[in-house]
Amino acid sequence: MQIESNQLLRFITAGSVDDGKSTLIGRLLYDSKSIFEDQLLSIELTSKRKGHKGVDLALFTDGLRDEREQGITIDVAYRYFTTPKRKFIIADTPGHIQYTRNMVTGASTANVAIILVDARHGVIEQTKRHAFIASLLQIPHLIVCVNKMDLVDYNEKSYTDIISQFEEFSSKFLIKDIRFIPISALLGDNVVNRSKNMTWYQGAPLLHILETMHISSDLNKVDGRFPVQTIIRPQKEGFIDYRGYAGRISSGVFRIGDEITIVPSGFSSKIKSIDIYKSTLQEAHAPMSITIRLEDDIDISRGDMIVRSNNLPVISQDIEIMLCWLHNIPAKPRAKYSIMHTTNNQKAMIKEIIYKIDINTLKSKHDDNAICMNDICKVKIRTTKPLTYDSYRKNRYTGSIILIDDTTNETVAAGMIL
Image (cartoon, rainbow, N blue to C red):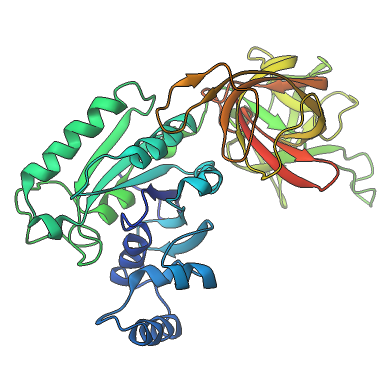
């Protein structure tokens, strides 16, 4: 399978505290020679000052002072690196339960979730919690890295036992692609290079899997969705009558001549042209940024959506959402929040809390109506105007929302439409 050289893959590392997430990313960057010399020198000096024999690889991502002092990851750390085959954006997410919201933030746009499991401890509650969130967020691919194999003498049975444990509880997950790799992030076994200590493992090292993983089909290419971001009216010579609708295609394919409908208004037209800078396309697909011109003059504004006429989304004011509360101030009953959905911004309120997820047992709690920080719950909301959406399972872009507190302008929740 041929991989586009400029294709971008986003992945997160998740797992329990001290499972080696930051060390794994440090090893990936270090062994793939993706670190600048001045960065490496700074980390070497810090490692020496802390009394480490070699380079403390975790310091490549633990950028906050508190993180370095405590030896933990607190906030999501994003790192970018590239290989000849692919570009990568990494989100290193915290392992502590009090930072569950940060894991949700880092996972929201990921193609791949790397779940680390300590070979000595096996699958524990926090492993299940992060795997559950990855499933909830519909991350298409999951790689379970059984780390610290050097501390169990590279024992194959320790590895296969963990695979059995993980497969037992993940059988109900919606993720179809789950892979397992035995690694030692600290020593580099099966991270960038094959391990000489685990000849019983016949698979590829982690970087090779990330470089060759097929992610093009992760995008929804069936449901044509184009949220309008702005109206293009140049009003200059040669473009006096030009009226285009600019934005980024969320999903699907659009072609010149396609019959389209504007939602929520319901007006229909045909695509006259698809424009990008100084040229015109016959067709465009997600996630391209384009300008669409229509054959008819229709009143369209930011927040409207252009869709294929034979494939309409749901339009409703009453919506069921799986919500993750991100703020330290609890949700206010029936209070109004701003809801951001694609390019649409309006008001909404939480009408009903259907149930909360017990993050430890992953079971539903129906008798708890308080939504506090890090809580994940199923709620009903009502918007002031009809919202145009798909379910999150069908489309991650048109099926996701955030809630904003108008008094502080802070994001208080992220949600997946059911």
